[in-house]
Structures are given as structure tokens and as C-alpha cells.
Image (cartoon, rainbow, N blue to C red; front, side, top):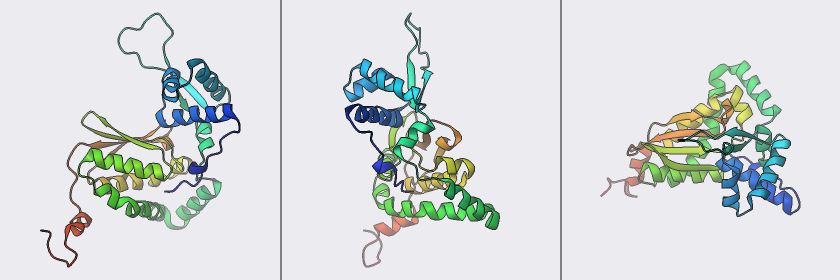
Length: 244
């Protein structure tokens, strides 16, 4: 699941280039977001932020949408929310290319859907085993969601977790295989199953970048994680006896 390109995204030279890259990253990680919120987060003037956002929009790297109305709207213009387009996400690197799609198409032709699913499961299993201890060591769903978000961020997914309603919401603001997953949804399906495994509870995928959404969003119910065989094994003493 590692995205080699995301950790070393090219940053344009010069102060303006670095600032624009910072604005774009905030649109990636927090979008849809208002220009005023971007200015506040980055400690920049609203005018400067709008200049950089306008440039991103002009280059096809960002788009705007009208903020949802809450209560009575004043006389001013409705607030606009900004987020990156697929072209804008590309500045942060992608792990997919035509070769990956061609390889999976060949695999599907030779071995069918099961061959593609087996590949997807093999791909995600390395991530699960690498981060299982850090995630399952956490007691509750909120802590496990935070640990999983941190693990995904280390792998280049720009992930975050927050409490929403009756559960936790895991957001992946960058998907390095979005174009591949758009044709082969098995990549998303096995990733979702891996999240359920690590979190010890059923999870629900609400949105994916591969389907055209702004963020990959996963709902995690606020229920105690179930104890898995692996967790029980960790609780046993080193000489093989029962836990105290």
C-alpha cells in the first residue's frame, strides 16, 4: 500500500511555489474548505490565499462548490468551498500508471475475478501485518481509528480520524491507486476488509476517490473491538500458558 511518490512530491521552487504547495496540501487534507479557513490554518492573508487558489483553479488543479446553507443566509455572496481535482492530486504523486492497469487486465483475463482479488489481498496483507501491533494495542474504537490513520499517513495516504455521531470517521485524502481501483474495485474491497480486521469491528465504506468522491471515507461504529485469535495469542505468557 506504500505510495512512493507521495512522500517526495515535487515542490515548485521559490517562496510563491512553496506557499502554493502548502495551500494545495491543505485543500488535499482538509477539503472541501473555504479560502478563509485555509488562510487561518496557514497564517496567511485571505488575499494571498485567494490568489493561490485562483491560480490552482485556473490551472485545473482545484474546483469550487457552494457551501451548504445553514440557517438564514445573509446578503453577502454564499461561501465557496475548494478542493483539489484529480489533476491537483497528481502534484502529490501517484503509484498507479498504465502498466499497473494493463497488468491487472491481463491477470483478470488469465485467472478471472478471483485472481485479481487474490492479488489485492496479497497487496494489503503486508500493510496489515506491519501495523497490526500498533493498532490492536489500542483499547477503544477512537484510539484504534487514530492509530490506523497514523499508519495510513505514514504510507502516504494523508489520513485523519474524527468522532462523528455514533462512531468514528476515517478519511483518506489521497489515494495512490485511485485510477486502478476505479476499474478494479477489489482493491477498495480488500482494503475495507483489512480495516475491519485491524479495528476489530465491522466498518462501512461511505465514499471513495475511485468513485469520484473527494475523500475515501470509512465509518467505524462506536462499539468495543472484538478480540481476535491474534489478540488472544498476544495475551498468553511467553511459555505458552494462559494469561494471568
